[in-house]
Image 1: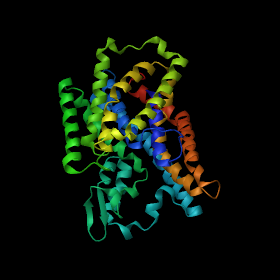
Image 2: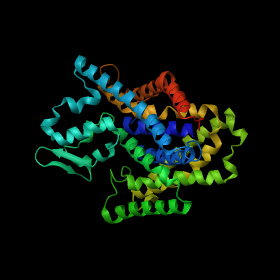
Image 3: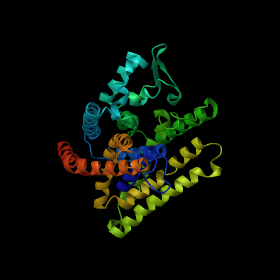
Image 4: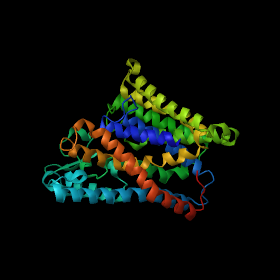
Length: 372
């Protein structure tokens, strides 16, 4: 499943860069929701024997998420400040350098700034606006206002990381529920989403993929996938799946399935709307994700490439902004997406080799863990 995580991260880069991957891939929002399924699967798996205490799970997951996050936050802030002082290009800090308190109220700006440090709450910032006349107020469509608060997020894509963290808080309790209770919760989440689409008119961003009660269905689908797998021959992996030819064929299958996903999503039969089509295509992908884990988890390279997905997710918007700023002066603007994508992958590989790999070894020793 490592290649899938890596490829989904690239799909997010493609969604933001615009011209990075030359063939059709799932949209960024669908890639994020598929990530949620993967997360639910992995959390159910690691809670089924890797941790003696819930407190150890919380500490381990926080370190897993927070250490790379704060490394990247410090690096992006530092590089943005350096670019601002030397070239008057503040990159990821552009909103902070452009007189924020002249456009937005202090409460909203400071709240958004605080979430850069806590990670928690970055998803909630997407539902808030603040200006000098009306003050801090909720909004159901942040893109339709001139004074949103998400612009003060240094890594605005980390709204999904904030959702992940909330899921981590509740997943130990969810994992103790019976399977039928998980199915019931998944059904409630699905019904809430469809009701909001049908009767609430909330079939648009941010409700289609950023609202935790709606996204819970994907996490639960992943958890149920693990339960099915663990009940099927103990989840044993066929030895033949560790060969390189088979692994490369499976990677090609991931790419082909992603292309088919996009084709089906764009098809005219997506009636009654793209929000419905995207939701059901993602949810129905859960069994394929489980099968991919069965087929690839024994391959030694799969875990390594999967480790690049989180650093790519953290760094890619910075490289996109930087590449666009440098465009025209150093290279044609049309190249900026490709340059940003390749830079993101290279930086993630260096981060993994020199920092993340050693940190993960220490984290596993700290909690007496074996690699998943």
